[in-house]
Length: 312
Ligand code: UDP
Ligand code: MG
Image (tube, rainbow, N blue to C red; front, side, top):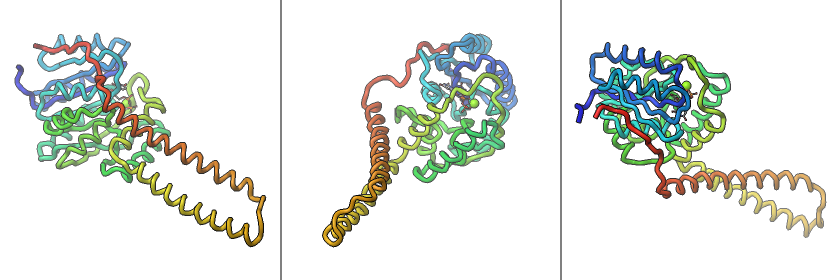
């Protein structure tokens, strides 16, 4: 059993062949300068470009410090990180994107905070370099998460973060399925803090997140950490039934006093359509939770590892 390093750096990789060589070069440069013992764990999340070959080469050139987990398919960024957490041996664990949007040069800043005694060091991006659409939708989602869950973080999307070993062990033990790692870690943290980090444009390739995947991720985040959507729904239901009760009473009295009425038909339709759409949304929200229960109960593995390439 190799001795535990002070730091494990965890990097999920999905078709990042062009970014890997500069990333590896910059990362090892920074880590070597720090003078602490480290390991780098890459998870190849089912890439179909040359990523895996590059990772194998990194390992062959640096068998002591580089470990590669090769997934059997694409299981998503967060599962790729989760698998690496299970393997990580470091006292501190840092997560990083492979596309160089998170500059490795910021890692010492995170380590500083860990040394000060924080067990969770989050980050928010200074001058975020993403599309106008992404940046603004993110703001909205950040706000919604902030109001519906008790997870406080300025920028949920930034993956350049450092965690203490205890938090990672908790996460691994919890065995959660579809999960948002920074939020889960925050839950288990006793002393969290945040630092500002630089953010660069993606150097090569495209973002792996399309609109659908972003929506899924955010649903997971909210239904995974809060029951407020369900509760809001119940409260709304109670309020609407109160109001419609009053309306029925009014119509009844009116019928006795003035007689039956036939106008206002389309107002009625409008109200009806609105309520039907609310009901459909409600079924959707309930479905999110049912789906979550279903996934948790099913015994299927969260991810399948083809091979772990490391020095035995
Ligand atoms: N990633 C992954 N599996 C996926 C999608 C993304 O391992 O299914 C990795 C990707 O290679 C990168 C990180 O997760 O290292 C962040 O992905 P991306 O840059 O596409 O996300 P964005 O910066 O647009 O949020
Ligand atoms: Mg990116």
